Amino acid sequence: MAQLETFVKQFKGDVVLPTDPTYDQALDRWAKNAIRRAAVVAFVKDAEDVALAIKYAREVDLRIAIRGGGHSPAGNSSVEGGLVIDLSRYLKHARVDPEKKLIYVQGGAQWKAVDHAAIKHGLAGVGGTVNHTGVGGLSVGGGYGWQSGAHGLVIDNTVQLTIVTADGSILTANETENSDLFWGARGGGSNFGVVTEFVFKLHPQRAKVFAGPLLFTADKCEQVGAFLDAWWPRAKAEEGMVVVMMRGPEGKPVINAFVFYNGSEEDGRKAYKALFDIGPFIDRAGEMPYEEVNGVTNPLAEWGFNYYFKGALLSEKPSSDLNPKTYAHVLQLIDSSPSHTAAVILEYMPHGKINSIPADTAPYRRDLTGNALVLVQWKDNTPEANQTAKQVIYAIADVFPKGQPYGNYSPNGDAAPTSNAVVSDKTKELFREYYPRLQAIKKKYDPEMVFNQWHTIIPA
Image (cartoon, rainbow, N blue to C red; front, side, top):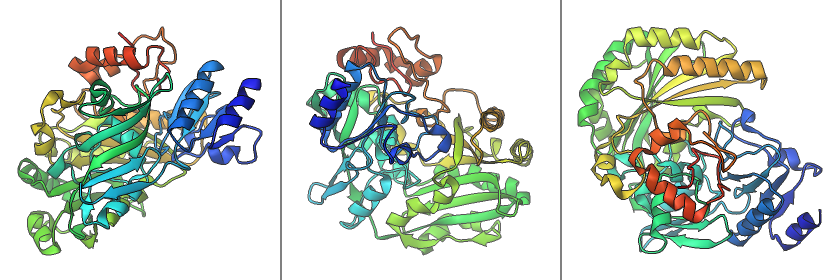
């Protein structure tokens, strides 16, 4: 108890315990089923607070979780009986240097803060596609967004990190300073410490873009797949699409094609003319302020439900994934549990820029065909409902090509709670030839595996 009192005295932020009236609020997460009953929640105010929290947790042998946006349904940002380092209350701001075209983003910020701060200066960065996603988790795991066709991944646009490591050191990591840590943290996830600040490149951005959803009836499935076959190999840097197989609000099967074009409505409608010619029964695409684009898909990922998701790989030919037979099978699996709402999200972000960057720039795969995400949502957080969600997810994901998909779409953390843990085969498959190099970095900065909530790397 004396150790806790000492920690609280030195700590500038807020320490919340199970006896506090705000405890349940402090545990809040995007996915209700990701909530864990932590022993301590430490709302940090700066990097020094992070170092104090790490020191205290290690002294009293509490496992650590890092909470940025709290958007992991796998529970990566929560920990049962442990200590949560929560950056979301105080470290959530973004500051732009318009001359250098850089944005300084605190580790607990959401992408909405980045989008809104940058566009005030006619600039934008690569971010996620749901604006209440946390910057931190997405950024250290890779990071795809609407700007990826033009500018690559989030990790390709990261120029500096401030990281608090397991021994409490507050380090600056960039190409010249602690460059090994900089390399490892851009794709290696939260394995090496707590990032309290990101510095990202920004790019000139027009104020309005053409974007929005087009809804097609199920009988248009084959035509939409044929359009994707023709468009996808030639997709331009300013384009991108997310295609969703789902049931609409009235229970009717629909194909929701969300289009993005970084230009005018006139040019956007020309670029997707063949898609519009198929005849959507709802067309809500139009010019909108750039900073609003990442909020349009938020209804697919509302805060406060139970969620489970799993990534999958896209086929090289889109119609292999989107065709009448596959669509009917997916709908059958979706309907197998009426208490659960499911959707299959196919992400078509042009990969030319991503794959043009040298493979060893960061520990991240440059040969992915593209990402699919199977998402299940439900209301009652019971063990039975959770198990059903997993069964539905795995059955749907099995429809897609085999292989290790995008790490940020992992259905579980592949966490390893002790130093005696055996590395997950999925983790080895995720990092492939980079795994031994990551092991060496882990040994240098976190030999006792203090950080072990996401695709845990075992020290060399």
